[in-house]
Structure formats: structure tokens, C-alpha cells
Image 1 (cartoon, rainbow, N blue to C red):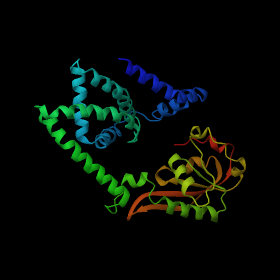
Image 2: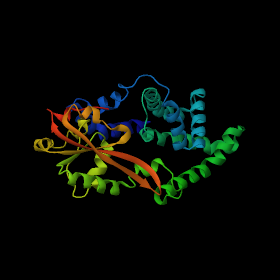
Image 3: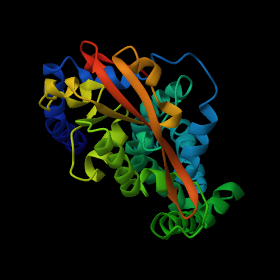
Image 4: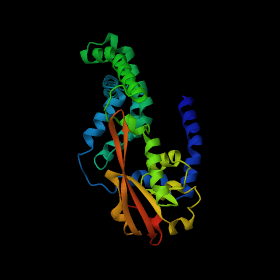
Length: 299
């Protein structure tokens, strides 16, 4: 058929700007993504988290139907369409499985695999009423209600916090409490007459750039490849006091002491929602930059 090749050609045209940009910037996207596992050694620590997380995100019974679809695709040569869908999913799934043996896989990373996964599950779903397999029949019966309940529960917690004192990842990802945290951080900044706020985390950089009153400069010191299209920070900033903000569990003050003559802890700010602590941030005063502080690449 002509259409799969036409779809492939359209996809290539749409993706070409990304390829061109990477060719002009040292294939940076590929270096970043495949470099994530370079710092980690082999471990089973993240495997269960990855598999369990994806099972919940896909919803368990849809995952069962998709697994049945793949099993049949490779056992029955006549099911060519299912085999195409399987081959669209397997390379990415294999990569994330390998990644989970070295480092954490964030739950949203495999999301581009889900359309093909859902179509595969739908094929078995449509045929399940004629099935003899109890696993397939029960999966067909429970797929939609269980998925609906899970989605409703997640949205209810995200929007209304119906379960108090729950430290849920949805509240963390949606920046609940960040406006209050940013206001307290800005009090530290004004008290110390700091010229800018610096971080070592890109999500925190984005949140502070959005929520800090007055929008002072917010600069991520590491992973500078994320900002190649931005103008470099004003060199005059490094000659003035700065405020460093980090999650307590990820703070890099020891590494920063090699980059600044003065690294002084100022305090901590807690991020809350409905009585639950979502996160905690450490605040430091930095002064006396030594050389190019943007070369910092601590983890």
C-alpha cells in the first residue's frame, strides 16, 4: 500500500527541522538522552519502579490486552497490522527497559509509545467477546471502568486535593505551593541584595522564573546545553551576591564551594499542600565566583 510510505515521508519532513538543528549543534539531543545512563552502573533499583509505574499509567487491563495482542502478532503471520504496531513499540520499550537498569525512567518519557499500545489493546478488546480465555474476557470487562476510576481519582486529587496530607506526585509536578515558596525565596534574595537566583535543576529553574516576584534573573548553572538558544547571562552578575536554591535531597553546595569563595546556608523553605509536605528547598548565599561558574556540571 502507498499510505504507510506516504505517512513515513510526512513524518520525516515534520521531523527534519529537529535533525537539522541537531546536526548544527553536535547532535546534542542524542548526546543528552543516551548520555543519561552513562553516569549510572548496572542496578535493579529502578526496574520495579519503571514496570510498576508503566503498568499503572497504561492501566493494568489495557496492558494485559496489549500484551495479548503482541503475543498473537508474533505467533500468527497473518496478523501483519499487529506486528507493525508491535515493532513501533518494541524498540522504545527495549531502550527504556535498558535505561531502567542504570537510572530512573521518568513516568512520562515512554508516553509516545501509548497510541500504538492503545490501538493494539483495542484490537483484542473488540474481539474479546468471542474469546474462551478468562484473562482476556475479564480484561475486556474491567478495562474501561478501572481506567475511568483511576483517571477520576487522579484528576480529583490534582484539582481539589480530596485526600489531605497525601504527598502525591501530581501535586509536586503541578507546582502546587510554588508561589508561596517563591515569595519566601525572594525575601532571602532581597535581604542579601542578591543580583540573581541560581539553581542546578531545570524544573526548579522554570518554576522560579515564573513565580518569583519581580522576575529577577534565574540561571541554571549546569546542563547548559538546554539554553544554547538563549543569550548568555550578564558576566556582571558573577561579581555580585547570588542566591542558590535546590531541593534538599539534591543540593550541590559542596561542589559549589569549589566555584565560589563563599557558600553560606541561609535556611530552608517547605512546600506544602493540605497539610502534606510536598518538598523542601535549601537556600544558600553565593559570593566570590571563581572562574567560569557555568562550567559547573555536578549531579
